[in-house]
Image (cartoon, rainbow, N blue to C red; front, side, top):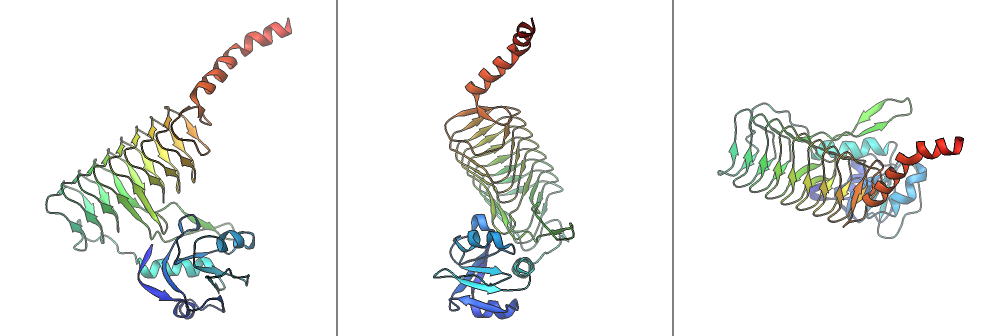
Length: 312
């Protein structure tokens, strides 16, 4: 998530009641993001000491911590009592929640050639491109960006909140404000009953030319490449990256934060629990290269006979 205007570190420190500034206090924050998506100029945070080093070594320029640490060159550390609350506060201020009060917000930018069927809801700060077709009873959430020639099937939900909670010491879960977006690039087709979560502070992206069947879920911050093909009931965990040309057949499940390489194919009913190289075909749960997996299954079918022979 990028800010409309850069925020000087000194201004930021006063705003979030930082107890101390360590490092370069002449820097400016241009955005805020989760650790896996930070870019130079971004704010990130950590409130667990064992993760300080990872956060400080990330691309983030301004880091919110709850205790002092050695600051790398070209960065600034702001010491605050509760880094998570300061982080969440900034997102809520720069992406304030605006409840839907009318079916199509006056703050939405909709190309005159786009078609919205009855029952479509379009929230504030969204855009829908030329010749796109949004079918009946679909919801387009705040800050979503729909490209040109996009088709979205009926009863789909684009831009629902990220399923992302911080666990407090007492075991309760505290919800983050979802300040990210969903970006659907040109010539994407999305089937009926699909759900695509927006990012926590980064973007969920569906690449140009990709095709999604019915009843597919894409988790927060996932990035789907161009010309991908997903069959029905595929589920993609948050923060996963899927490169161009990947095919996922029906009921494939992909866990969070893995990487699937270009032109990989995952056969129906498989479970992806680790990153996969591109250009190969996979099967099973956990998914592995399909020839090896089929050999394993063939060997397992012979196991009862082998055990009987051994018993004799």
